[in-house]
Image (cartoon, rainbow, N blue to C red):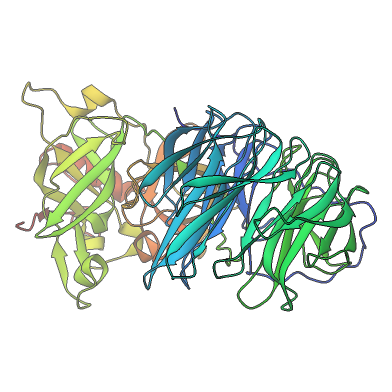
Length: 597
């Protein structure tokens, strides 16, 4: 079972500053970091440090747990996120946005840790360490899952770092609190764990970082309540800086471009403090929520970033200097902590694009031409009729295949249409007739406001019609959206997902033209033709139109199903013999005979 999808809607805006925070703060560098956190809805959210553009992934997290992000080890790589879903399984969001349930059960209330390193020239590999539901330390990544057989203290979480050893081989080290209360270190090359005989405060977790070579440094709250460090040996150092009971530090490389490491932690005063790994700590005078921990990183250009839950419950971000904190205005779940990575955040949708199990009347149209495979989305709107985008039936070679511009071709007959296609199991495939239908306005004029079309689905071998088997999606002709916006739900099949994606967002008029819509949803190629439905569940438009639905996944565009669309449907239902609304004008239907495979 997948994580529950949280209710749509924005988080409460929390404007109060943390205690002792300066009211006049410097603007934080934009487009530098990505922060993952559990919102006060218990969904996983991602943010670039400001509320606008922040993304609700719609993925439910286990209460009281925190996600982990890791920037890809190769230059220019994206990042990944790991978290405990509300099913207690370990889930991940990959660099290309795929959501993966690993099927690996985690100890309730614990959090994973993720790290990456560059393998070869351009392949980032990731590992995730976590406390399994057996209380053992497990590590998964790079195609392998390892049960180390090492028992962890219940309720604690490990910290992992991937790096190169002295011979240039990739390895990873994991720091964790063992079930004897001591700090332990596990190394992947030896496959063994080592008791460092350094006592930890019960219920806390360590943080590990690499120098970039074979050496590591570990920060942790000792059983005295002080912040300690160790280079992964029994030689620990007491920094004599008191920590808030039950919290954990965060260590990163390259503190202020001077020291090898920097450590952020919640002091026993409740404020956020930093230290370069010495007794010289700095109070940033930013109040933290009791029992939570910060996350610290430094970008490749040397810009530091610390994310934390303030004592207002809001997500804050700051540099490693006093009076530098900024509230995102986004509420966090009580007792949870954020994770920050040095990757520019790409604002996604103001809606809630998410993976879904699908709908019986919406499915995937499969195509191929020689070795090239692609798909579009279709909606069953009649006993034998599937609506899609016009460009899925007739398109330019430039748009479809990156070929020369100005050449328009007929698409091949879809290999099949599969309603409610998803990764949960086998779904019945239906055959499509070799003729699709578009209007003359699209065929001859390539007009974005006519980017719609229909296919006729062949009856099943037993004579059954698709609409009588899966149902017919409610639809209507429309004049578009009102002057402000229309609450809209859409669903489609972006080509790089096994499951459909859905989104709730207000649709607004595009360029003042009520025949086209703009939607704050994220749909890549393959979502074209997906229905846009109003609050009653009635489809009134489809993904397409401007830039054939959008050159980039965000935002997405739609085209209204007007009277010309209704005429096209009637013409297809009559087998190409019916009258049309607009006769021989631009709305006239044009049969498009499929290209040969």
